[in-house]
Image (tube, rainbow, N blue to C red; front, side, top):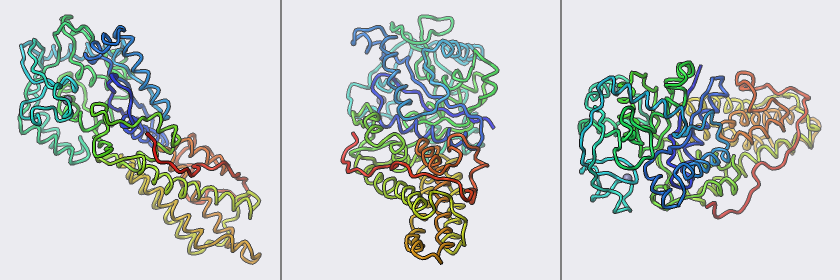
Length: 515
Ligand SMILES: [Zn+2]
């Protein structure tokens, strides 16, 4: 099966933050999960380079706009590379194929009589680059930029408008017919509430003197409004308007992964834009929550930032990936702080997983000459741990396929905990003292090794490097390259095959800050 997923593309007007790494890591876990299960995956991420404010920011910085956006986009690409994000394409909205695809998309609107020119006056948030109705503001301020009194401006200009109102009925039907189009459900309910205001036509071009942006077909004095240009990356990123064969292969997207602040654009405007252009709709839009730090959303606009490069260095990339997805459930808003992550690191990674792997391999080295022992005589504890392992495999896949990564990781760590408890119950170090206990000793260690092996394969989407380090120590096929159906069953370790003790996976450190 093909699986096509996307993240939002990021504004390049500031440095990346931990919240950017969070969205990309969730998407990356999903991409790796599908690849591991045998799907043919295309993972698109990238940058939104065409915001008009880039032109002003570049002027202020004394460089030309292209130089400015190239420099800033490089930081987001570096973020992906640092966090081991396995994207298939890093699309930029200055890419020539994107520009060609956007113009083709707009031509289809024009051919469908879905755009018209009019003079518009409205309330515009210069930070969101979006128009709002009076009653959508909070005390006259943008709900996403409440600290910035100057963000909202009254703007009057000649714009092309898109006939969103024409698609209201079709969109209502879409949400009735397909309740899973926007998930989680409480996000879907927010979208439905927007219908109650009625859908008004929306401005889709800018006619000001600013030249940065994609020229409107037939009217080069207008540029395509950056939000609409940006949304179209999801189709141009896989060939719309330039490579029909590629586009046919990947579209529709199986899931768009976005933050809640941009759900109106994705859940209302984007499907209407696609209907107008005669393009099939995506299968699903997943709206993830915000990370909150010191009681406030992490974002560049609030100035509340955690540096994702420092975090990756401090924790290690795999640990950082694990910590954000485990501590902050992808489907809701979550408080996060260096203290919370530190506690999680010590409990789950250093004491839980790291300890399990090192003690298992140390005991196998000491009592079995670093070779996989016989399955021995499985007793009650071995049967229990096998049951936990088989339940973890099922529960993990159910949660991961719904992007509930915290639950998916909890399923994996139920096996980590069960294996550590298994050693407390069976006490292999006691069994080793008596030659008559050889069979129960081997059974206890075999079950422990099997638990470690399955944990490593299950962890691959989240901690790919650590998963490979564990499978290397076990002398089994690498987590990153093995076929799921060949490895994801209890009891595949072969008696006598060599294992090796490696360096500690997560050295326990006293940390107080990752920022
Ligand atoms: Zn705003």
